[in-house]
Image (tube, rainbow, N blue to C red; front, side, top):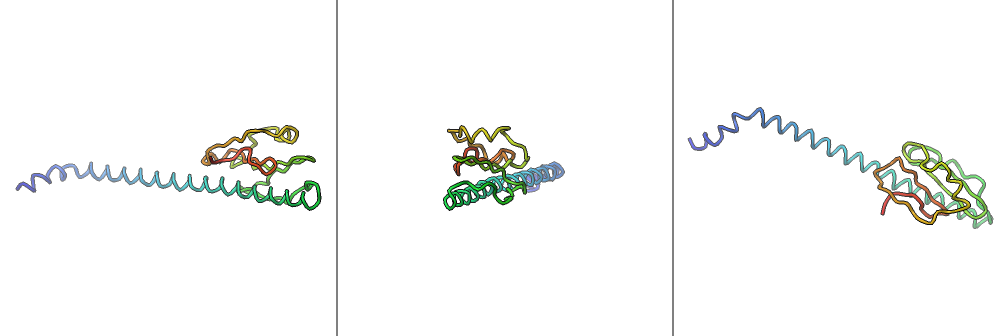
Length: 145
């Protein structure tokens, strides 16, 4: 009788318990989906930086071989399938990926050729719309710490 009395409130609230369990399941699915989506975004940002670093290495290599920056580079896509912007003058070069939205964060990256920025701007890797920018192989705007 004691056990039956202890269980009786649970039995009366079975509908509420099921609803709570259903809601908890939905929340768990939402959390797992968000983490998976965030990880994919983070992974793309990191891989994009690695890809731009490899392109920068090739540009430096070609300059070492020929004494000048190449006029053009092959149409390397970024992690979102868009062509990487390549600008150069006699002293500097810039590589820019416009991020997931494909729009530049800065309308005048060419000005970096005459006045390269001194400070590095870092942002969270979760913000995939931010540009990844390398100036003379060094990160100027990238994700990470």
